[in-house]
Length: 413
Ligand SMILES: Cc1ncc(COP(=O)(O)O)c(C=O)c1O
Image (cartoon, rainbow, N blue to C red; front, top):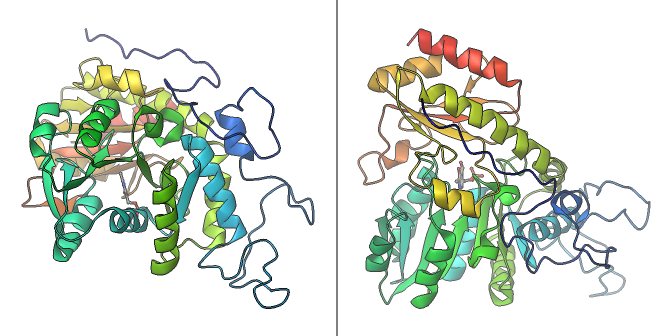
């Protein structure tokens, strides 16, 4: 009998260790104590509209802003690539959730990553990346940035000695994902910050899988956080977006310059949808975690499953670190099928509640075959994903329906 998943104590607004350090106060809420996570999610950057009283931040569908005389900007806005009030609201909210002063929103997670790496790297620079980075991140670095003279080493970030060995004088960025996509590996953010800073490099954490509700990397020593807001932040599979969040004013200024100069910005309706999703992030993440824990327990005991990858399981190699740096363990579960590639594809084909689709982090459950889908770009590389793997984005449906769906589909494998 396997030991059950250790559920973490639920304090309605308790933050993961150190989370709230340095969080800016809400506009209009200046008195202590610091607002809790959901209060920030619902209100930060979202004061009622001063001209109409609109409680919800309006979709400012405009490309430009009237000036009172040449250069006479009314609220600092001149052209919507440079800035838009709906985007500002999203950026202020994201900064408040990650415990930072600065955030920049982008048209996608990849646009956020590209802009951040252009801010941090120059030809000849080197970066350390996880051996199991998200396939799109790996493609950006290995197939695009290499043409601009960027070098990289792919390392198991769980092996801190290997990270120390990989860092060179020209290493400018240590790129961390935790938990990783799709292997759910865990890296110790505090330890990586020590290694990166010891050699003058910047630690970037892709916090997409955890979301700021479960983990706040800046409080643990990271310099910048990236998000695919397409996932848990948006939360409803209806918008693509990205963000970079930092406490570093100089980096934030450079990001603003590049955001405007490159122009990979989100439209105002995308910002509205993302903000709307963020308001329920805490309750969604609790339910995603509840359901994923049950799914992981079901799969762990199943004869057609050879391994379950979920940091909430006591046997997961990163469980101890995850329990320290995350509030709970999240909604993503990966599993290896005893019957290999054929069985993995059959499982994907036979679920009914879990929809076969790329992406993750929405309210609905999804299943996919990373080796043939999201991570196909890693084929033939050291980051190649084994073909017996399926990835589940466990949604917030009734858990009994999810368990029945997986049980029935496994019967057909
Ligand atoms: C961990 C992670 N980072 C970044 C991205 C890229 O985000 P987007 O698809 O919004 O460009 C993804 C997309 O799946 C992801 O899973």
